[in-house]
Length: 187
Image (cartoon, rainbow, N blue to C red; front, top):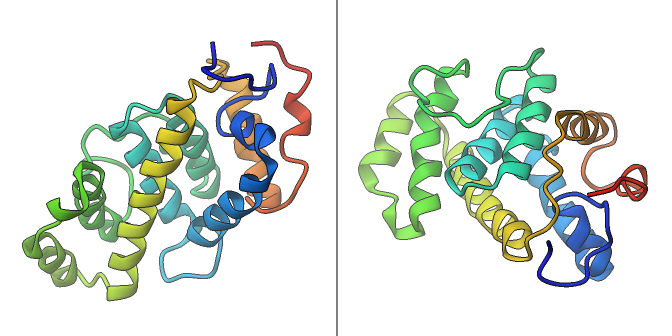
C-alpha cells in the first residue's frame, strides 16, 4: 500500500510520476540521457548498471524492469535478476571492472577509492565511462529511493516488467504516454 495517494494500478516509478507530472519530465529526461543517449558504453552495457544498483538497494521493481531491458538490448534474458557476482555475470569485461565502482557509489559517494578507478583505467575504461558509471549509480540510488520511499506498487508480475521493458526499448524513457497501458491494471 503506497504511503500517499498514488493512482491504483500504475507500477513502480510511474505511480509517483503520475502523481507529480511536473517531476516526470525531468526524471524521464535524466534516465534517457543516462541510458539511451550516444555514449562509448552501449545501451546494453548501461542498463545492467541500473539493474545492479537497484539490486543492491533492494528495489525489486527497478531491478527487474531494467534487467529485462538490459536482456532485450543484449539479445536475451541476460540480466533479469540481481547481479550477485559481477565477476561471473554474462557482461562485458569493461562493465565487469566498472560495476565495483557502482557498488561503491551505492554505499556512498566517498566510498569510491582511487584504486577502484585505477583498476578500471588499467582495463581501458575511459574517464567518460567512469563518469557514466558514477552518475548512473547515483541517479539510480535516487530513483530507487523515490519508488521505495513512497511504497509505490510493485506488481510482482513478470509480464508487466517485460511489457515496461519492451516499451522502453521501443520508445525510450522520454516519450510521453508510457503510463497508459498500466492505468487499467489492478494492484
